[in-house]
Image (cartoon, rainbow, N blue to C red; front, side):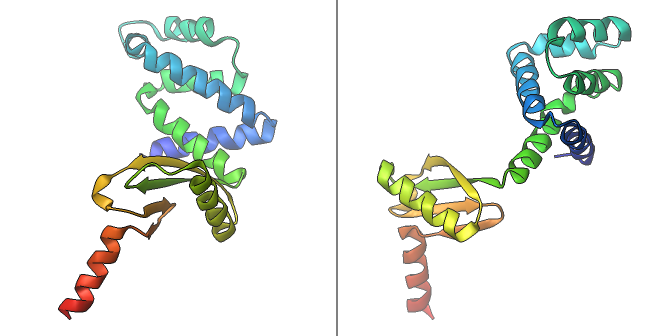
Length: 175
């Protein structure tokens, strides 16, 4: 993520916090992101220097006039400055700050086989007890692990895979 996107995303989050519109702003940004992703030509149109700035801003008013005013002003600012290409990164920073303010974290859980609902809940419970925050999980499969799970939580990796245990055993035997 670029430093510029972090600054813009942080500025919008602080403004939304001050206005007490963080949730509504997050929903507004999601609406804009969905529109931009489903219509890449629209982003190209809004970024075209051949179209006068006022016309591009009017298009944004027309398309997103119903979203939170601070979110609309934010998107218009990015358009004016020729930085719409940074929108997704700015939203990503906004979302990260929102999650941090809610004390939410998403763990990336990779397992060799699909986990049962009971296993998922037990893992979430242990992670929440260990971390002190509300944990959600994004589950992935990787048959090369052979068994067990690998959890990535922030900058920590908890590797309980059979592959890792075999690797450690091999190191003990080889030394």
